[in-house]
Length: 399
View 1 (spheres, rainbow, N blue to C red):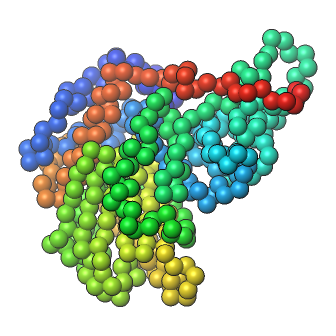
View 2: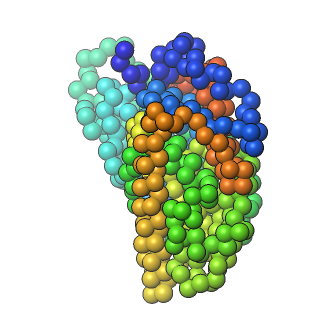
């Protein structure tokens, strides 16, 4: 049987493809007695398809920054849960999101970020307004029973937080502001939205996305994998806090002149389910997004923001900090790829959790079980028509 397309439920959600998963979805055992989920969840292709449908197709996903959408008519593109999407700033200054799919024969509206007065399909030239209404249809004079209002772009939910832009493919998602309200309150004094974007980097990792996320969620590995980084922590004070929508790892920083956190302070590492991270240090924000690219591969997107990119000292700190982060990331990539190989070994299936350091991993696996359970009980593809309503106001221009 050929694999189901990304975003669709593989086989039947009520069928036997996931019968072995259902027993795992009962209420999770408390952390001190819990076992990890089966290794199959990290290596088998059916879980890659399930992740895209049950997890990424139903959660808010970061796609860019407001600075990339500064001018009316500007747009950015991304892929979410295997679906091509586009976010555009309209002439009314409103951000709107659509599937990046022409309603004619599935061509792309854009293949990269850009700016213009209309969205024009790169395949056959169908033209849409920035509000998603079909406006121009070349060579269409002999087509019968055709109403352009039925062929507007298919919309999706868009929201922004701290100048970061998110989309959600689900029918009726929880508002992003409600999801992040506690993080908003806690980080308000830090002025994250005032920081300036410095750089974006990508890392392609030969591990399942869940392996990388779980590596982020615990400090247990830091003394072994990151010997230089751990020297910057007061590691005895490292602690993890688990909340319904996020985890927070925090550690006091040793006062040094190191570019990572000159003068000391506190490191804050937030993770919002399933794959969005905020790494906050004095005067610096780093965001991470972990995107699955296959059953045993992912891409990690790093964005860096700083409070001072104007002075020579500020630029020097940023460059040194990013170089150090790149070295730490190389260590994470290496260990995640090695763990992925171990998860595929006949010698391993399940493990246990460190109560002190792996509460975040237990939280993540619990949330994953909840997402799988909700999907398998109530599969929903395609999404409800009320969300994917393509009828926009008719354009004034003749076809």
